[in-house]
Length: 242
Ligand SMILES: NC(=O)c1ccc[n+]([C@@H]2O[C@H](COP(=O)([O-])OP(=O)(O)OC[C@H]3O[C@@H](n4cnc5c(N)ncnc54)[C@H](OP(=O)(O)O)[C@@H]3O)[C@@H](O)[C@H]2O)c1
Image 1: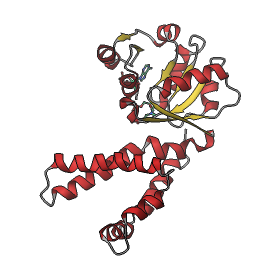
Image 2: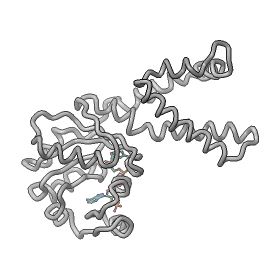
Image 3: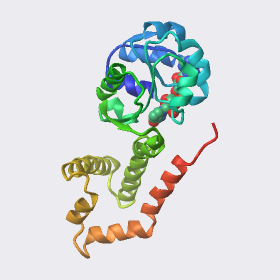
């Protein structure tokens, strides 16, 4: 996630890692510097973006809290209460970006937090708006949002792959099939936006009664595609042990 964000921002960054050398590779790619410790990074950075795994929350907070000006966490499943407990007086924000931030087409959700400092919040929102759109949601809707935008690049990639494979099985070359699928996804997203997200209208416009598309949609419904998406939502939003 750190690499996707840094690539999207396209500006020098200060980065750390746990010893793998990824921070140095990132700094070599986008500019900036791999810093020796999280404490030094926290003192020098304008905004500290936490991109480690949730399990390292306390270990990293011990070095960063009290030193950072503001902390933006993208850790899945780590609540504002957990962040506040770990970070004490240091201002914290909870966000969830998705991987298309890398190409400036990201969607980031930020947890509503009426107690937060408005000018710091505006600064954090502006930072993520540089790599896509930012949508505020109630914190208790963050897992639902994550299923829709955090996990969904993988879901849509699965759909794209399955379509390309189906075309390949009928003799079409992969590059042509992939281009047809990906440009259709992009065009459909643009059309849905233009139609105020009215999915039923977009379906109606393609699917004339008894035609090819209607038969294809029926095959998808018979195969359980809508139910599968509900099930994916269930597993992503199911309560987890800390
Ligand atoms: N992947 C997504 O689409 C996505 C979307 C939204 C949010 N997130 C969140 O983003 C976070 C990172 O996910 P990821 O997939 O990018 O994981 P990842 O590839 O495993 O990257 C985690 C990075 O954290 C570094 N790290 C671990 N301990 C550290 C420490 N003490 N100090 C500094 N750096 C440390 C690791 O360093 P080493 O390289 O040395 O191991 C590694 O580079 C997770 O909390 C996840 O919930 C991910």
